[in-house]
Image (cartoon, rainbow, N blue to C red; front, side, top):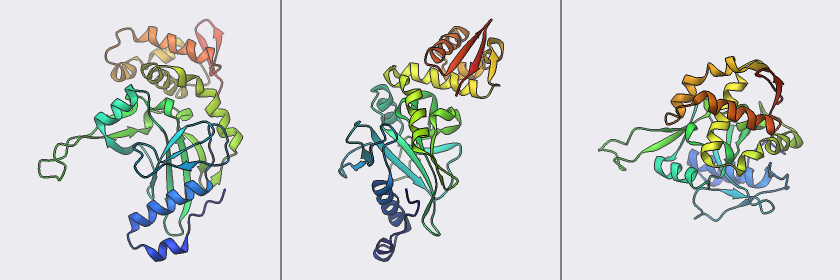
Length: 256
């Protein structure tokens, strides 16, 4: 994998910085990126009129959307129309999202990570304020992805600090968490949210420690009135899928 996006002909033929960035990032992805889900050597471009996805893997049929920025992705990522995103989640039709950070002085990839589709949940979506009445699309409501609500397993590093992560390590994390793919969207949200809380604890923890996140989880899932029972349920699911190990007497060990 070559982290350079530089193409002399693109820089010569286009003047708009945003257009140059879009062409270079998409060209690089199409040329250099493999499928992290099945390790197929390449991904293919969707036709320009394909809504919601940019690329797909011919082998495993996973779809991908690429978001690229010269600024580092931190807490929030701006996405599209709020109701559209919520419908995509409810229909279980979200693509996998790649977030790319590049340097436009020399057109080099600085970081690239994958948000698997089974980590896209209502919990990580923030509704933005409607556009003002004077705006061209007055009343339009967008949304943000809240990256700080995702566990680390929901942000799989492909390139980190301009260093390429080994493909098998990436695929191992995908396979480890793929059990979530067969679950309903609401279940995925709970599993992801509880896993995020687990990551903030020591590798070995007990129920009393994880119960301290009940208020946080209640804010994310206001319709649930039995938070502790739901936490225990998700811990069992994570245990059954070898993300956690049960040590007895209400104690667990984080295995990832």
